Image (cartoon, rainbow, N blue to C red; front, top):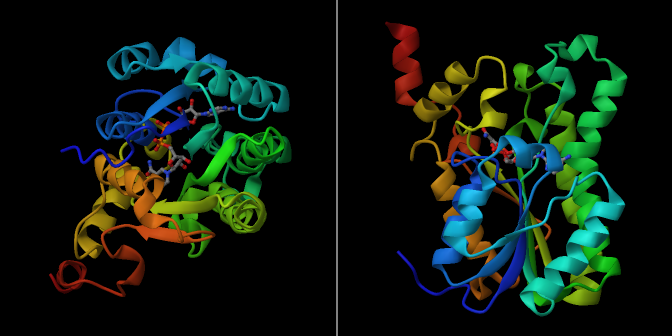
Length: 270
Ligand code: NAI
């Protein structure tokens, strides 16, 4: 299913760890739509992941970068422009990790060193990525930058832990940087608020199985899959959405606007 929506466009895709990753599916779809890109991930994830396979399949080069390191990001941006032969049209930030969640710390028992690290990786890294692009004047006019988020930024999902706060920060950065990128470089910045999705990061959330099947039953269209998310991202990278910016866009089969569904009511009247 290719429409050549991204023909001739160039970019950077962060966060493809394995074939379940939202970034992995996005890379495949961007490739099918004619876009070319550099793949990047944290050096440690490269050793664990299967990113080489994706690179081969999409004819892409890989440049390792820790998204919390300004030095790594500056190097990534300049190398990407060199490899791709010019400025960039799209960037996907698909990065998240909470140390408190990983170490099983409850929200009411955070270890703040862990909190700070998780915030740096999951939230501040989006600012760092954009500042690196901005300072290098690396984006073409009418380019598009997308980051992934979750609805726990607006409404409480207790087991989402400190990632809820990280996502609230991430969404705010999209609005704030979106202003400057729009005014000065005609570049749009948005976040996609995605349904629960069975990936490494997703499955790290306590009670994920209950979480995902509840969302499935609540959403009139059912949960959005990783492939659905990739397709939506392609639309945001394309020229068809040039005036959409500074938005948090819910991509969740209608979950966020549903008070209750028939399926959920039936569960409680059994
Ligand atoms: P994933 O585990 O496949 O991807 C997360 C990526 O972050 C991995 O590739 C990992 O290596 C990368 N990463 C971690 N630390 C890094 C660092 N210091 N520098 C560079 N990269 C680093 O999981 P998924 O689900 O594809 O996650 C992608 C994004 O989607 C995340 O922002 C996540 O919060 C978001 N999201 C996921 C949902 C889900 O249910 N899976 C729902 C809504 C949003």
